[in-house]
Length: 392
Ligand SMILES: Cc1cc2nc3c(=O)[nH]c(=O)nc-3n(C[C@H](O)[C@H](O)[C@H](O)COP(=O)(O)OP(=O)(O)OC[C@H]3O[C@@H](n4cnc5c(N)ncnc54)[C@H](O)[C@@H]3O)c2cc1C
Image (cartoon, rainbow, N blue to C red; front, side, top):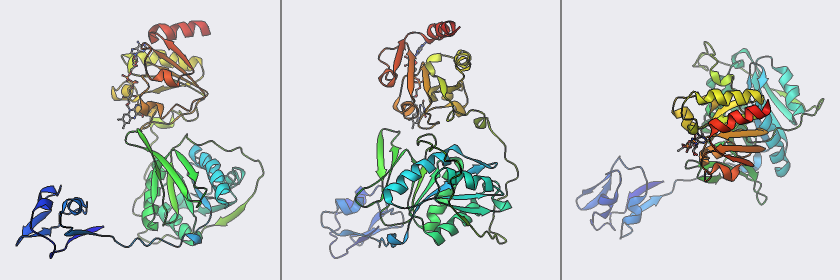
């Protein structure tokens, strides 16, 4: 959109000058003049009593959406292993493909990761597009973007799903910009509109206080990055086969601008909250970092891992890799024990689908009790040792 003054209608009242949030409008010989600071926000259009400022809608051309078919999952691999979120997306992708009435395909990039092709078939892929090249061994923006973008242009998928990992969050927007299409980041729910088969992409917005459902009606592919740990993993069907399509990979001088020198593994690699069956989490109610020793004791006793609220991370008591919630990890264990955690919406967003939730909190009105299956009102420093005693 752009805005334009219709000079014949302007009466020089200066209402637009006062209303412009960017001081972009000045008076030139008693006629409003829109300068380069204009962001096309349209405030002036609404305040002008004489209809002297108009919006110019730029042509929204879109593409011929009928040419695009199939649901694609970007099969992210690291060190020759499929990322859990890619497996989850195979399950979700199959559901979407069935609802649209199209095929589920995976696109895989790597070096000699042929074994993953079979794995993807076994997780439900009808077709696997496979790019095998030394430059694709480790994720790098340029080569991955080039290969996947070329495949999108050639094979025209209707939907492309990526895990909202660091890789997916980097690759997704690059692809969307190249394709001139829309991307919804960090989705927690995907559905197909039964009337027109379009993808409805839902993600938390405004600090998780509302859920926004976003559509991409006129451009293709419809692209989403999806939060790890939210979708169900499909059952693996041993021996299932599909069609393998090998992608031609060619890089010219200057195609790859960044070089990966070394991959340094952080602590995050060691804390596998998404795969844990039991998580014992501590929050600000611990009162001090030492409290996590008690949390760890209980987690160890139950064969689980330690989680935390953001308040505990912000206090510097524990590393962010342990954080559960909207800006941490989304988890779905068999058992989630929240100790000294109030149950803010941003925390609940990351754990409320856990199978059984136990809350230990001094305050019987804490919101965590609203999602808890079992609640213990009491001081965690008395309750946890009692549980440990009872466990023997
Ligand atoms: C954009 C945004 C994103 C966010 N993302 C996340 C996120 O990913 N994860 C997250 O957790 N938060 C997140 N937050 C922060 C969130 O809003 C809360 O501030 C945070 O979850 C509070 O952590 P808490 O429950 O540990 O602390 P508090 O809210 O301070 O609660 C402490 C609780 O401990 C109880 N307590 C105190 N002493 C004891 C005791 N001895 N025994 C038992 N109970 C006791 C208290 O009754 C209280 O209920 C986010 C916030 C924003 C704005």
